[in-house]
Image (tube, rainbow, N blue to C red; front, top):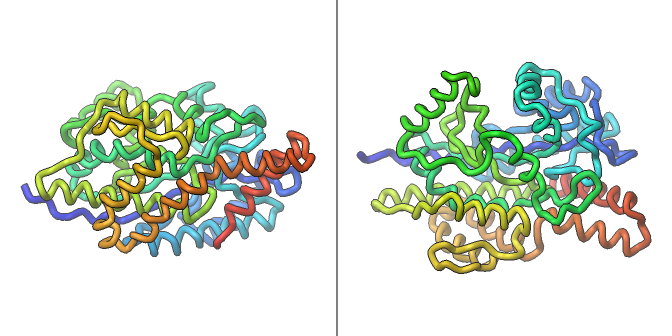
Length: 378
């Protein structure tokens, strides 16, 4: 059956942590007027998150990466300006350098109360932020088919976004400690491979029937069919401190989806690999970011991320050019060359200690860096 080309529209969600600009620690309970100020500017595009010290923004449905840039920068700027009036600042990082999860409070909202009750101690540590990118795919079965294939590229996108090296004042040695925390929840990680949307729905319906979950929004896989929109939602990524990094990864994801549909039109597809192999690449991206290489399963070799990125740029260039985002896709080279936020945070810490700062002072300088970089380019 000939399936019409999907819209490949974009939607980007980012979660931020709210810090007190005096202490650089997280604010345990922001003033109610702060959220009101955000809603006044952003409307329904801003929301509370599980922890009171978190906030989430989401762009409108965008046709191009240019539209996404305009809306995303507007939303970031609005949150920054609203926070400034209360002595606060958002940081786009997936963990705070030294905050303690035991000192945080979860938002008093029915959904979050249910999560706290159902998940117990596993959800108490959920002091983490992520970035989610939606790509519009209207046909149900096409959505599942492309989700199966695009899972291969999730470690590549994670490697470009890592921003959570610190946890409770300690360098974890990981570039994305966020996933270590998140993977304690059920229904996380890489999804199963499904033959059709019908098979996927049968699994969801069975879990709902037995009372294991209320709806498909309680699936927290690295990638999933959205239960609210006709999209495939990539969720594996850390939130990017630099807004242009966010747009680079979103453009890359959009272009990969276009490429996979283009292959399908030629009766071709990306090879599906065992989940255990893809989990190995996921771990390597989580541990090292873009520095130690990922496995090229076709070649059966460990390949530097820089080389893999060049290959990927070449594969999707035709699609990126048609979508008007080739410049953003090529910018992934810059991320690999200079490193991600995780590496920049470590560099700030090292520089501070070399200049005489003690451990706590150096971590506060990391927070200052995150405040400044979150707002840069806006």
